[in-house]
Length: 432
Ligand code: S3P
Image (cartoon, rainbow, N blue to C red):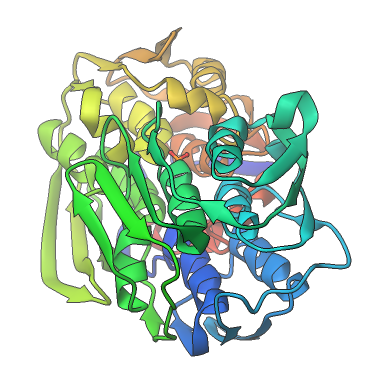
């Protein structure tokens, strides 16, 4: 239980200073995975030492890859695409959906048996979205409820390329199939309704792979080798999001966030906050390892309500809980729609956001595919709230507590270590 006592009640705190945003979670996972499949040594700098990415390292070590972790620099000694070995024990992905789904794609192409397990939350997350296309490619997969939930067992083998239209816009689904496609005969083609984050496509190219991207369709031809390369991981915009919103809605704030990834498939948080009237500027824009980065400077501003939906959703899917909090402080109504994917994240984030923000006095209602929030300039009221073991809920509620009169108790903030181990310290340092 973490107690946040806002003794300066009624918004008297402000946030001023600089924050070091930890490395991007999606990119950190992929650097370990692709480095493991490559020939040669991959050096990963600014690697995210969060629990999810440590689960990925653990799984690839069990598959026989030598991985050296020295502070936030990681060396991956790849043995080539066929170099992974059968694990003697189960592969435990912890809380990480990205590890689970991308790993399933990789081991589907390898001629041995693996069992994937995870924590209680992973056990509720739908895996059929990847096991179905992977079975079509020739992988032998079994698991609870017709390979919908972990534990999942996979006996990989010779795969054939498929053309697959994914019903969901998901980078985890797209990446899983593309990675299996690396091992398959012929060409594998994946398309999705809206474009999801494209870190896999960019990083596979950096590892020397050829793939074809046309709109929302990506194709890859099997049998290609990956060559080790050095990866510098940009700051995670999904982690920066908590400070972008906090800096916007807490009066008299100014925060500088350096070296944050601003890949166009990830910057929905910036376009939505801009539409709401936020004051965020991009400085020092450059491209590192094929990924655009920038320094972000946020100053407090008066926000107004907006509508968030359609193809914008995949570009800010992980930021919707903190955007809901931003909306609670804006003038007028905000509607979040087309976001049913929120229901199958680390928690049902429509339900958990609505339940917990309601306790703090926000006027918010759940819909089938999103939420409707009535903004207000009244302070929130302190209350006992819970993260439900979801790291992004824990961080959103920590920011919310700064806006609340009196004390707020947040149950289980330890889960924040999944993606942002020193979040609390960094937030504390900014408090003025
Ligand atoms: C991720 C993709 C997204 C995102 C998750 C990380 C990735 O999930 O929510 O936190 O690294 O590919 P979906 O691809 O399932 O939407």
